[in-house]
Image 1 (cartoon, rainbow, N blue to C red):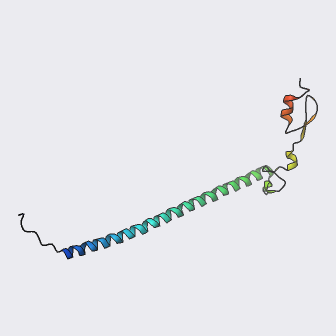
Image 2 (image 1 turned 180 degrees about the horizontal axis):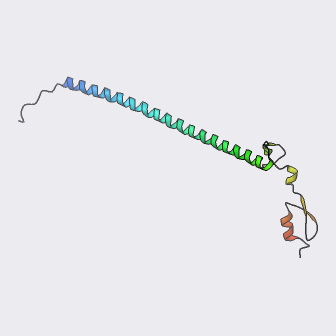
Image 3 (image 1 turned 45 degrees about the vertical axis):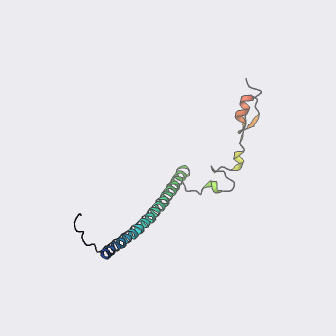
Length: 126
């Protein structure tokens, strides 16, 4: 019908395909190891960038605090907020209660924390 068919050596063809499959498996193993290496590099790069950013931020914060302390006091001081009796602004707790003010209208001594409320409702208001 169509003519003579060429002789196909099936064992040789299977052998060639086995060699191709082995080469593809080697390439796949190499590609997988490269992918895992890239993932490790990306993770390490991210961690290094985060640590570098944190160190930079802490260094700038420290320099700013030292500069502010030197500018305000002429000397470097320890952080006053670390003292047990100070608030976050370095003020002592007794000062937070508020020094009293004398009301202009009724002449009473009013705590600074209640002064604004008192002036709105002062009985001696004119």
